[in-house]
Image (cartoon, rainbow, N blue to C red; front, side, top):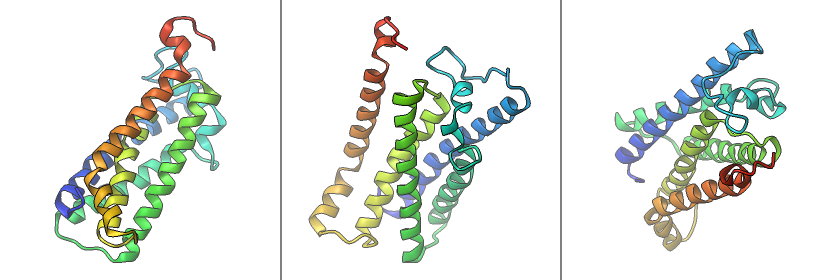
Length: 194
């Protein structure tokens, strides 16, 4: 996965999924702004609702809706993947910048995940789609940068990370699913404690 062609495809696929989810959130947010009584397409029940999450302060941490960050960031990811597939090569500073962006994006998504589970107590399916694509992005951008010497680590550690990238990704997905299950256990067992 750390070679240009498969890595480029990973960036394009993850970036397009994240961009579409962010775009759908933007469209839904615009509808909510026009009509506060609007029910978003993912308003399923009291625990699964994009519309209710959009009304919290956490949905606009920097003074504007968070999904606008996704629109721009995922466009950069897709463009980088397409450039790699076309044979482009990037300077070390670009890869370091991409690493910083993906790492900060992942940290922000982890914070949003914790807010959704433990403060808001509502899940947004489109937001969870963004969470889902950030996991392989941070794992594989890091693995690629270690493998190509952008991030300096001992050779053995770099080999282990690049060989275990999908295992790390699967473990992170499992941790997210387990955290959702335990945070919403009352919902799953039918005793709704919220």
